[in-house]
Image (cartoon, rainbow, N blue to C red; front, side, top):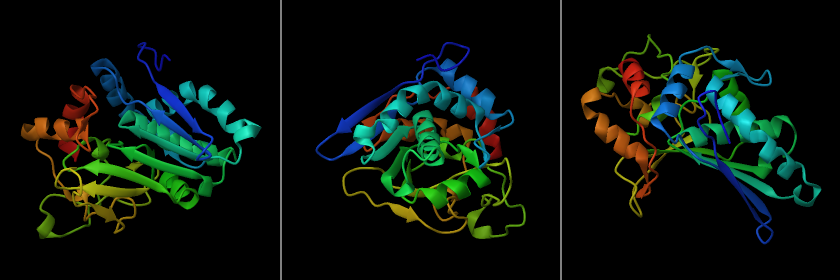
Length: 257
């Protein structure tokens, strides 16, 4: 379906298993460089109110609004009301999946214990207030991050200027409690050494909550290593997800991380 005024597309598919009694809703990531640039431009604009529980990225919200008419009838179908719902997606798809999972709770289409969310390379989708609500209502919420993938650090959060620790060089943790400032939700699962079978990973439960400074948020980025960042974003568990991440969104945000 058409996702924005520039005729870019948003895509999803819905799987139902009557054996497992579950519904899986999968959102596709960014499909073109043009769409990426529109996302970046919209990320620089003010956030949009999301059901009065927090502020969210306006492009991601617009994408959810375009796809929601395909989702809501499935979730409301009385034949499947007892089914667990799993949301997932990569990059832009992960952001839409997060909003869809949260909206499902807000509209009481499922209780939080009937929802599971797993995203891959998801950018920051909402602000701190959104994260607090999301975390309080959806406990099974995980963001998978591959090594140097830059996208989970965009748009940049506001950094804690009072933090002092020479061990982490120029990096600073995200500031908590800032209304409107991009802030992650859920639990990060960070793979710092690749994603081959049996690769080591960290479950990031430290401070700040959902932005654990011991995990990928401790990294600093240099534009000269751009290709490495793109490669890690495009490859999850040794699968090339082929999101064409090139263009100004990286260039405009990289200096602020």
